[in-house]
Image (cartoon, rainbow, N blue to C red; front, side, top):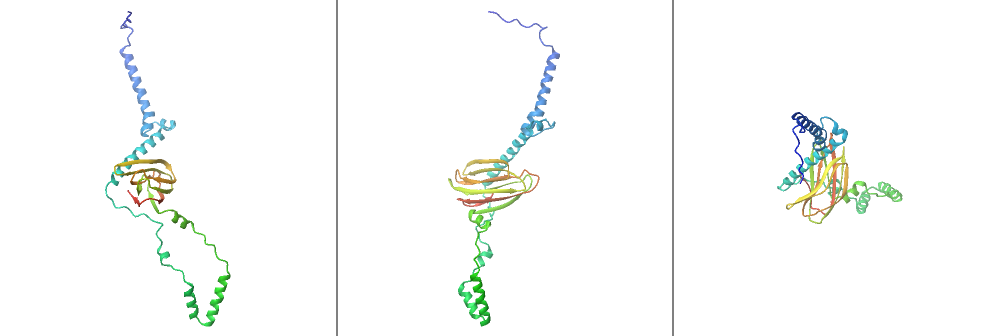
Length: 253
């Protein structure tokens, strides 16, 4: 059996070589930490190399998602506590002017005409004939009326830079709600999720999205909705419309 000969003292690296190798390894590790790891993980880029390599943006995304996950966890804890829901603006409620206004019947018109003097009655008769001969105006429903029929609730809110808010629907398991939201002033980060009775789920997440629409099917009985975050440098106004099978729309934050 052949055993490898042990190296002689002359063949071993000197103390100076070991120190230089160790120092070189430390310098390389620090350089990689500053130029690669910090920008990619924490969006910290003191040298600017991470921005050139596209790593800083990756770190910014990770940081934002981590912050929003913490806020979402906090909102779930707050949702488990009893809180008075905010009143949502409903398009389904008729306005006071519509409720009080009533068309004049033909009987009332004839009674008014009968009470007029003969000359005035003739003028009134001629006016009625002219109106009868005039072509009827087309009754085209306005866009607002169509939207009112399509959506059950609508809410408008404004987010300042860095501000977040949450709106949820109370839904039974298997219920399906339709939704559409749009932002004015810049895109938003959002997280569509649900919680209730010890359950939690994330349906969809988005970063830098100006609008979205679709259907939301409740995976379990509880609160299901959206968390919005404004990452712009200016205020952003959001309009959220919902319809379908749900109990109520509540502002959670």
